[in-house]
Image 1 (spheres, each protein chain N blue to C red):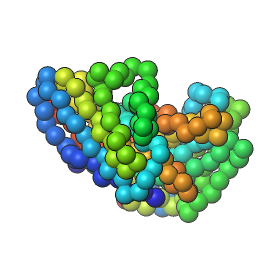
Image 2 (cartoon, chains in turn red, brown):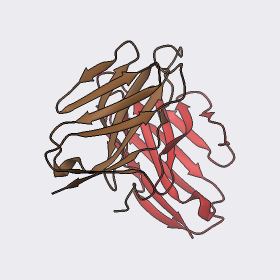
Image 3 (cartoon, helix red, strand yellow):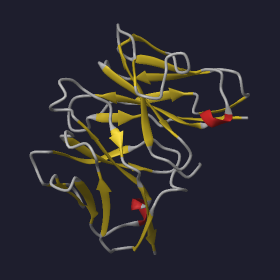
Length: 114
Length: 116
């Protein structure tokens, strides 16, 4: 399966600021996804990031709040903009690869907004 | 690291016993299902998957059962070990009928605790 590196692994941010999370994959992948996991909760899909096109956002998530870049087949960024304490969550990057593992996840970025 | 299971249903079993974790899904169009294990401070880790044209699939110490009639999925873990303690999530999508690769819809999750 693909190996995914996310940076930063955790951060504490002031409300009103923005944080950009990076997702680096060790192989070229077509499909990349961003998820949010609120404290003690399950994962919720934020958006699908395809190289060369605009990201596709799920209901309840908008580009102004969560802008995404996908400059190539191994890298993507998610920005959490104008943060509030309600944005405190784990943000996870995922990729779809071939083979038996299908969808692989990074370790996540643990964001705390104060 | 922070626990990911603080607000999730909990299943407590004795070491060596079998565990059964259940999941209900709502989308009758879903045709691909995956079970993930998430340990504290880590991302979800693939355990086993099943397509909707099957009702049972076995792996090493794990079995997934799919009942499409009642939209229910279960994960059976045989002879549980301390290392099985984690949060378990089911996930679904329409990978084979959706015309393209979708992201996953996750279930609520279950926190499995192994008692010594």
